[in-house]
Length: 279
Image 1: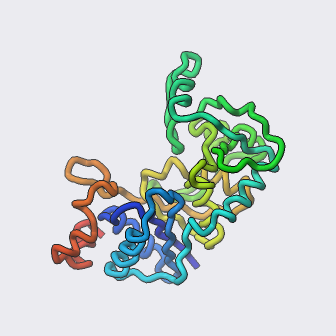
Image 2: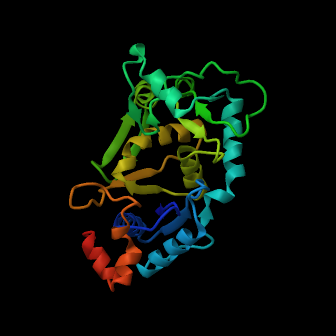
């Protein structure tokens, strides 16, 4: 039975792009289970009122899901257990660099200038030699030593894509190291990171197909690597097209004019929303 999910962050209004993603995930789950998950680990920007509006807008679109809804802010101890495992395996190290430190190090002549991957600017490994003994550090960023981690995995990383250019996919660990660097798995103000939380949540909820936008396509090899490292199931991935404005720019939460709530206030129907996004 297929299990899909829609996992928004309650940091602003849902827009037409969210509607497309939620409706796609719901359709992909036909005959199975569609889940709603609230990704609220950014506790500074996440607001209860936005979470309430997410539920209201999705119900208005005709979507239903099992209750209770998983909320990441209630699972920090779960993420901590996974960090503890990776720390005990010697795969994490504390990082004291700020963004300016990373930019300066990545801009050094021997580094060839800054490069970017699914975790932002590719980290040049400045803190990789930091002490990894003792208990798991608290309230400090922790990075995955990707080179060391990939030495634990035999052969390429494999998964199945059902959306963009569907078919079997694979990436060599060496290519992943080159394109990602050492990603942050725990941020100082969150206790985890998107990359870690999402793979743990998908496994715990039994998600069999991850439905999300093409903007997250390049993060998939890293997520598969984390799944392999923590012996988690690897779901299928369905990366769908993005909804863009008239200039070709993909919609974001700053695009309040595209908010579902505003269309509702102006008298639009759920059928109108579906037509707008070509669903």
